[in-house]
Length: 180
Image (cartoon, rainbow, N blue to C red; front, top):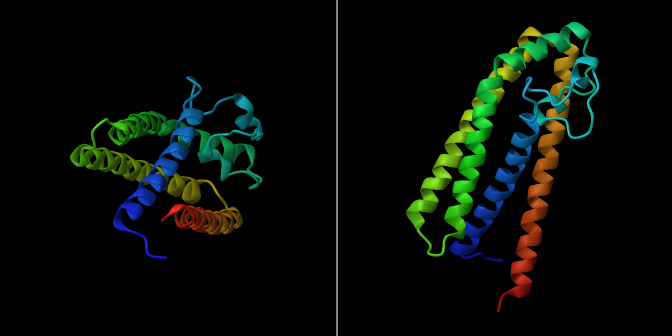
């Protein structure tokens, strides 16, 4: 099935909105505690309740020692202000994109500016995440823990690809079923 340019743009916007929504969920969960980057004190005890901030989910199942947990908490605390600031900027950029998409009159320049702003902030967040991840990997984790972390990351990437393919397939089916 051939898709028209406006359908491709529509798919791109849907994907952007879905990814931004996921980022906003992350942002809301991560900054929920004013004492630091943890929503409760359970992290210090090694407990990871459902709904834990995404940056901490990757650490589950690594059998971290108390010393490692303290080191990771220190690293996250060192980056806390930058994380919260970036998450708040991400939320504002998402609101800007939503406003541009839902504007009464379509304004391509406003929409492109909102997309550029959102992309820039996502880039900042990716850099910050890479910096934190590198610190945790090089300063805290053992080689066995790094190997487990990498295996899980590959699994998550594969699942993400499968979900994206499924979403595109369902969108294609819907468009085809509802086209003239």
